[in-house]
Length: 272
Image (cartoon, rainbow, N blue to C red):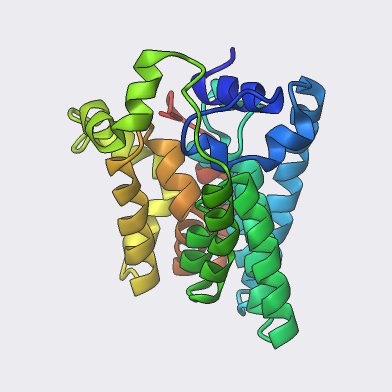
């Protein structure tokens, strides 16, 4: 099933102008076009890249290998990271998260050249999804990734959004994102099935949460003021920070249980 976002990316891949913010997400439509096989290749490759970068990043920051592996498993198991079936494989969230984590890992090495390389990688991710530099800043807990916003600014200046190819109903979402987001979430703000339950074992991160966890969550849930989806939005924004913080909170001998409970869903979890 092709969802609205996927339809826009396929249209962009065929050279059709698309509405904002989809006109900023040009790299994968340009590379993959409307060829589903290439989208599948990118989607499948994103998983090992994301998991490997997550492990490498956490080890670089001093986590033991068991904590790092558990954090990567918990991150990969989050329902919002997978997302709804309508964004598989034609979507940008998973590839952007994978590439952004590579950049964050490079920046964690700390040397000027490595930080610069990380910013360049995040700039590459920003061509996939414009929010990548902001997410990288939250994960790396650094302002350096925000330098990559220059590629978003250049794209915004050079390419203007077109009409939404899906028609007036979706054009209204592009024209009035706050109004449409508030309408979409009017019954969701206190719905634990959508707002809390999909985090699973990551809620352990809220035991004595760090400033980084609190800021990442604030930004992630703040995005719901301009987006109509819920779980995939907040988990691609704050998932790496939450997974890392949760796995660092528990004794090492409990990490296998964290992985099992975090990766396997025991009910029909919200993924949109």
